[in-house]
Length: 43
Image 1 (tube, rainbow, N blue to C red):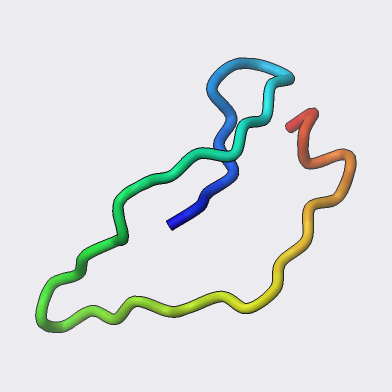
Image 2: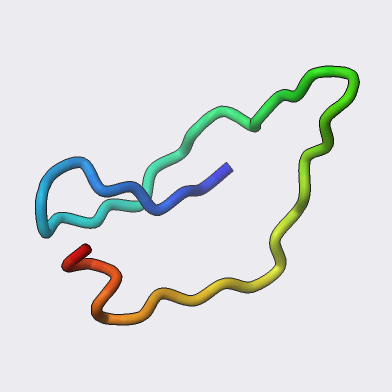
């Protein structure tokens, strides 16, 4: 799956990462939409 990662300070990259796995008592939720505020990059 594609993921936005922060490999270093003030650096954003889109990478292919493995699909998440979960234990029998957990679930994986598919996210349809998300957003990032400009200030989130500074945190």
